[in-house]
Length: 250
Image (spheres, rainbow, N blue to C red):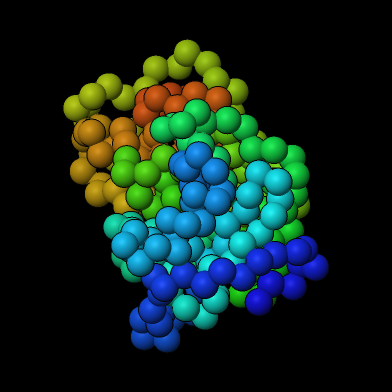
């Protein structure tokens, strides 16, 4: 159970199972609900017909509902991968953050909600020994299939509170990036850096549709001012800074 001192409700979801092979969670995964209200999201996550669940849901009011004990495997990540691992559900704790999302009117996350997300995340990270670079977005582990929690989620604020891996994004300029189907050593270096950080991306040396999708996922988390799948100078420099910071802290 959580130890934040924040009030919360426990509403068990039936959509659970043991973590495979006794795996202990080492990823904290952030989602948004893409539902009209937290009540509807909670009903869906606790409905056996949905085949989905999460460990925690944070309402826009800052209220917490826990649905799955952290020792159990919740069904929140779906088909996903990170650093070659494909069973992200067994490796992760999932927080659903109430937001209408793209379907119902994506909007900024209220301060009270973010304060609760920070307090809850600090508690989870401390108890489970989750490294900063393993605090991830759903869009990181499922590029193209998922875009949550999106470009309005304040990763900088989490990092300032000691949660997650982050560097200041390089300023956007008009520096050209690789074009569709372009190939060469620059593309291969980009792919190696993204794959080395953790994204599921084959290193082909060709700037194909998959590469563009993964670049967009990277931007959703780390270069939010423009999400277009183009590896411009700002994106590449931000990625280089991130990898360098990871090397220093590892």
